[in-house]
Amino acid sequence: MSVTGVEQVNQRLNQLISQIILEAEKGAMLTQERVVKDAKTKAPVGTPATTGIPDYIISEAYKRSVRRQSPTKREGVFTAPVVAGGWIINPNTGEMVNYAIELEYGHSRQAPQGILAPSLYESKGYFIEQVKRSIRRVK
Image 1: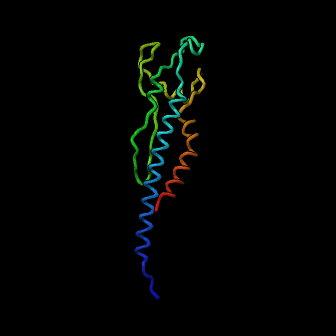
Image 2: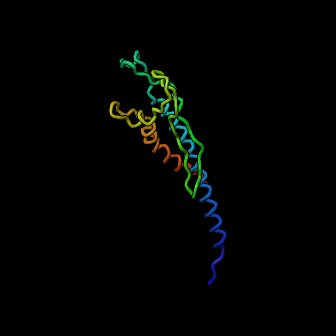
Image 3: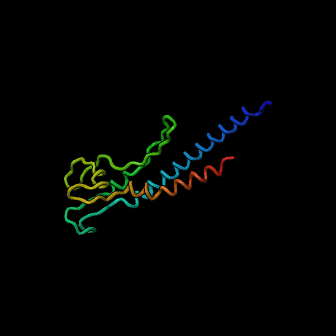
């Protein structure tokens, strides 16, 4: 008994796997865009007049700091990072500060006002749907 066509089957399976991975990476990048957009809508912005809290100022800089980073692929793992924060000038003190961590997780005098974690969590279903679509597109 002899078996023929095994090599062709293996080649085709490898092509399909490569196509699925490429499509899933596209889905990850679409999800990345969605997370950035959603996080920007969640970003707290306020002044004493809008919040009723004396000396409360969170500028638009925090909202603008939400951004995509370039996707990377290392050892077969694809990442499409979303970040927020960076050094900004505190409008109250004039000093350089990075409030992103305090806003995301809170601290002893402030409750968390997370934007990234909720946006990522809410986009999980969207990402899963993108992967399913990517698998269906492979021919």
